[in-house]
Every structure is written in structure tokens, then in C-alpha cells.
Length: 444
Image (cartoon, rainbow, N blue to C red):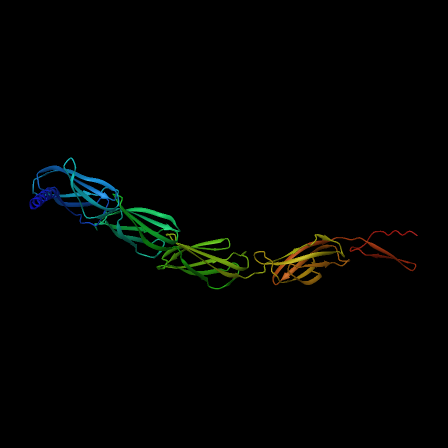
């Protein structure tokens, strides 16, 4: 029994030594990379050594492993001496488009099979850059510049070399887009807001490098103000036609008084223009002699060279001036005893009817008065002449203070006799308006 046990023991030791020798036949130690995250295009360093117990000639292979995807980084031949470490230190550019958790496998191949394989520490491959970008103002007046600035880095902390796309969005749509170079990670861009419409804008900055790495940064938002605050007034409220109007006003923007601009003033169809100086303006103009009476709006608009504008409207009162009286409805000719319907209108400087009372008279050329009454402007009234008025030119005249108006008409000649008996006496009466000088024929 004892000899059998020794034989078994010897066989076991022999097998153990063979397995052990096979097991330590090749040893690979892998160090690196130092980074825990890298971008596409970055370099990583893998170092270590290979140790064998016998002399060998083989291939040392480096593979990038990302999930189920593998990319060969390098294969090189190695000549190994028994018991002598073969050091290696290789730098690789990550050009694979695979992203995620990765490592580098280092394997030793003797041309027939893989003798040993070891993996590096894990690291993340990503296209994501990092960075911060901001704007220098939240509220800005049109015409001023807004500065966009910031920095961007790769995953290993080195500054980005590439370009940035600056985009301004308003109400969800792209209003403006431009690009600028990014050097040493610095992003600097200025936007001139001249003639840019007012409103709220969102600024986004997309930073990229030549390997497709990128980051999209919300740099913030700003409100662009293109309004000018305008105030204006006149020296008084009530004016007469043809009177001079003295007007003055002010204009201010976000930063204070508007230093320079143009003032446009309109009243009715009349337009005037004046320069704005240091936030103030003065303007004198004359009202038309035919301007409509009542409320008149004065519209003020101020603009500057950067697209800012502002408006202001206020009113003055133009008092009506009775200017003329017109007579309507009068016949050109009338016979004694007939009537006619008349309207008389009191009108102001613009020809608008004034509601007031007018004195109406009917006179002949000798200014004898045949009708005298007070009538309301625009209301109809009746004039009736006596049956015996003399023929000739007559005048319907309206009076309101020193304002007069007239309409001429003609009273025609009426030749008419009226006969009657007074007992045994024939009475002949002239009922016309001219003397009868002809013969009378009487038949019995």
C-alpha cells in the first residue's frame, strides 16, 4: 500500500509541474490608460511587459474593445527570451466611432494560438465635449453689441481647438446663425443688434472639433428692446386756424436719453420733420387756415439709425371760426305772393356747419326789408312775398356777426286786372305789381 501511494503522489507532482509550467509560460502585465474618459481623436498610452519562461517568437496584438465591437489598434512581432521581461509602451489615437465603456486587450500569439491575453483598465469613449458659455447682458437696446464668451474642454481637460456655431432663436425659429473659431478652448463672439427686431432671443452655442466631438450649450437669453420712450406736448390746448403751434418733447432709451434721432410729426395731412438732440426736440408749425375744427391728433414718431423707434399721440382743440354763410334752396325767380323753402348754413373755416342761429333778411336793391327772422343753421324755413312787391332783384341775406352770405333771386312782373260791380258801378282793380297803362274794353 505504501509504495502505491508514493507512485500516485509522484504522478500528481509531475502533472502539477507540467500544468504550472504551462500556466506561467507567458505573463502579460498591462498598465493604463491614465484617463477615465476620452474623446474621439484623443491619444491613450498603454504600457506593461511580457514575460516567458522560454524563448519565443510571436505577435503582440493591441485591440480596442467597446462592448461587442473590436478594433485592432496595432500588431507587432516580438522576440522573447526566457525569463527576460519585454517592456512595451504604446500611444494610440482613438479614431473608432464606437462609444461607451471600453478597454484595450493585449494578447500574445505564437502564430498558431493565443498564448495569453490581458485587459487594460476601463475607460469611456465619448464624442461629448464640456464647456460653459454665457452672455454679458439680459436686456439690451437695439444698436448695442452683445458679447458671447466661454470656454470648452475635451474629456481629458485639454482646451478644444475647433469652431463654434452661434445661433439666435426667436419664438422657436432661427433668426441668426454664424460661426467663429475656437482657439485654446476660448469662445468669443460679438453680435451687433443694429436693425434687429425687438423681442426675446435664446442663444445656443454648438462647439465642435475636427474629430466630430461636440457640445451644445444654452448660453442664456436676452431681451432686445427697440422701443424709444417718447413724450411730447404743446404750449396750450386750444388753437385757432393759422395759429403757430409750439411743440416740444423728449426721447429716451434703455441707457438714458436718446442722443441722436429724427422726429416725424403729422397732423392731418400735414407732415413735419426735426432732428433730435440729446434726447430733446422743439418744433414750431402753423395750422392751416382751412383746418377742421375740433379735436386734432398730433402724431409723433422718433427713429434712430439702429432701428429703434417710438410713437406718441396727443391732441389739441382747434376752435371753429365762423367764416361764411351759404343759402340753399332759393329759387332763381319767383312771382309775388309765392313761397319758397330755404336753408341757411353757418360754416367754419373748413366748410363744416356750425350749429348756431343766423339772422335772415330779404331785401331789394334799395335795402328795403321784406323778411326779417332768426333761423337755426341748417334748418329749413319758408319765405313768402306779398302779392304787390315790385319786380326786380331781391336778396336773401344771412348775418352772423361780421359774417355775411347772400343769394339773389328775381321777382317777376305780373300784369293783372281784377273786375267787380259795386251796384251800377264797374270797379277795375290792378292786382299786378306793375302799373297798367293799356286800354280797357267794356262791352254792355
